[in-house]
Every structure is written in structure tokens, then in C-alpha cells.
Image (cartoon, rainbow, N blue to C red):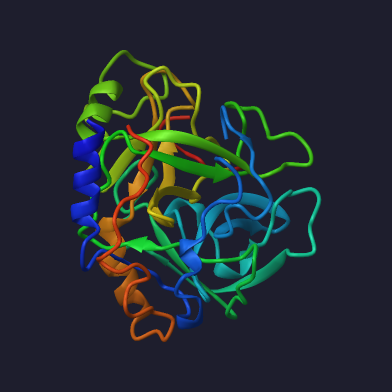
Length: 313
């Protein structure tokens, strides 16, 4: 029920709650609400409404999404990176892929840290931390998102958002000018999602039963219709708490796109929050105290290919 979900999230967001890896001068940056009421079954986003969204490029091609979490750091999916770091660029302030705006800035990558437990698409550990060559300057369309601490649990049924420039149907590319897409989807707990995946069969289903592991969460509808798709990999699954946005998950894999009983699968952020913080060491970009204090209360909660990654190309 919605009430129990609110209580669960409210309890888990108490101290230590969650932290933001943002400049102290922008400790409230991740509190900015989206600029419009908020991929397959989605709509054009409003320019600047998801200011942490990044486009990861290999050469001139968009291959994956990602989320800005600090001045020099981006979170994405491990399976997005198979080449040398010099092969990639990170674009911020981007809205339409085929119509570059004045706000667009590109950054070379200093280092890519794939989680050591990662082995392949569809398995645990599909998360990467990307360090940019130079720090980002925040502005109205480039801002970080808050990261949930390891204690946070996102309740099943919570309405969250997925954004990206991926296909709008399986095998169907986003049409020109390739505007950033947004779609609202409810979270689905691991047990329920495994039950869905164990129902019926598709040619590209993962092998074995219960493919949704401890560090994964699903989002979508049993009937399909709305989902992330190829090209959305690494992008954000975000949930709003009070007036702040939390990065709940990273687009990881799915069976085609928006198929019945096959919701999109995301790597959860809380299991990797400590790894992310430790990897950054004593970075001056860490905010203390957390970007939201424990006195905040939940004001709004709307209620309730084979292991194909969602990378393009």
C-alpha cells in the first residue's frame, strides 16, 4: 500500500539518509525539481528538466546514458565501456542529439572504474564510475543528482522516471532531431519481477529462473508499453523524495523493450553507494552534511537480444 511505502522510504532516508557528491557551493543543486510534469512509451522532455543526464559518445555516436553526480564524476553501466578510455567523450547540457545547443559541453575521460564484480550484461555489478578529465561548471541545465546511501530502500510501486535518447521501440531509432525522452514507471520489487520473468517465454529470455539478483530492481508494467530501450543503457532511474531527486538505479538490461511480463532491469544504487564514495577517496566534492537533513519529511509520493544491454550500436 502507498502508506507503508511512504513509511519504508521515510525510515530508510533518515540519517545517514543520502548524500550528494556535489560541490559545497551547490549542496542544494540536487534538490531542484524537474521543469515539467514528468524510450518506449515516453514523451519529449523539457530542455533542462533532467540536468544530470549525460550522453556518452564513442566517436561521434551516442552509445549510452549516464548521470552526473559531482563536478568530476558520472555514474553509468559497466557494459557501456569495452574500449580504451580515449575512445569516449561525455556530453553534458545536451538536449537534442542532432541539434546541438549552446549549453552542450564535452569532456574527455580521465578514468573508467568498472565495478570489480562485473562480468557480463545481465549479471550483477553492471555499474561504472567515470572520472572526467576536468571538472564541470554547474549551471541551470547542468547539475548533479543525489545518491542514496546504502541504507535506503525504494518501495515497490513508487513512481519514478527514466530518461534517455534510446530507441522508441525495439529496433526503431529515435527520430530526428533525437530529443531527450522521459517516461514514468513504477518500481517492481525483485520477487515480483522474478515471478514475471518466470512467466511464459521469449526467444531472448535469460537462461535459468529468477534472473533478477540482489543488486537489481525492475521498473515498468506487467503489460509492457513503457520501458527503456537500446541506447538508454547507463542512464538514470530517478525518484523524487520531497523536492530532491535520488538516483535509484542505472539502466542495465532487458528482453527486447516494453514486452509484457518483461519490465526493464536496473542496477540499484544503494548497494554501490559505499564503493562509489570510497573510490573517490577524500574528494573535496563530498557534501557535508548530506544535501537533505533528517528533519525533512516526505511531502509527495505518487503511490504506488538475450540479456540485451541497452547500449546503442
